[in-house]
Image (cartoon, rainbow, N blue to C red; front, side, top):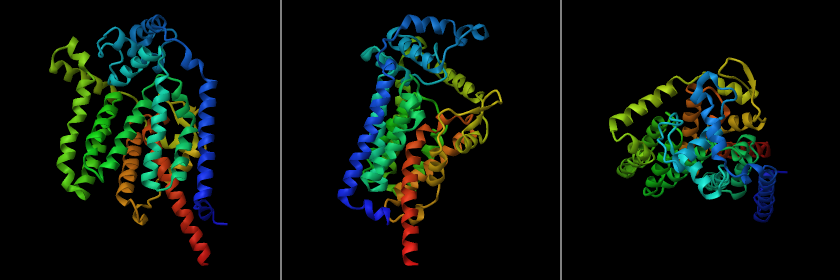
Length: 380
């Protein structure tokens, strides 16, 4: 029996959609309830302040226990927002916006992690919207959402005050509005706004290459919209500068700001890079860490290499609909994977921003190839 023909029935699709939706909601609710202590505990600034003061960032090698990234970002968010601290004094390595948002979560919810539920909910919704643009099928779009909902790394980010989840959300929102701009150029303003927000949340040098690719797409296919894209692009540096307002309070000098950014860039330049390590991670679940030891990736699942393989099949030329949207997503996938291959240490977290698109492309290519094979078998 042809599975695609079976699910093409609107009634069957509706039933399957609701079944899958129920599974997703049940899974997420169970996970949140099982880990409710991460969302119900009240943030303790004294504890985190003491932890930071005795950490490797203050006392160097004399630190005993150290502080993890989640604790560091939580303290930084509190320091920035509640103590009106200088953003260059604590965790200068990343732009401050994501940590301000952690501070906002502490201000509103008295907890540093609750805001992650909002991030994740919006991320799943936007992934579904992009899926509808590409797949033109609500059930398949929800399947892409389901893959992310059950992914161990995304779920783990729900319970930690890290930058990867908000960065992924803003990154995907930038992509979503860029796809919308292909039909209405005014959406370029929203797209560039979220590219600016993502860049202000976590520094990633691939933005320049990504922007060049998006610029080329508009130049080749939507040249009349080029002026709007250029105007909208100024939002990226504007948002970045606005996120550093407190820096200028303590250092009212553009020269000091540029020197600080040079310092930050030098730090990133010196961070470990292990060429091709991400592919070992993808296909085996093991990676070489920064001490040159082979480590097991606790978040790896067999679905990851399957998603990667199917997402990278070059089916763009045989897609009859949404070919430009396919070109955009496929190009972004290739560029970003090249970035994590060359300029990162191969940690799986670096794939998070692109993973929703990889899932959508994998579902699209799988259903397309399945239909081609089914049609070939039928004709023979």
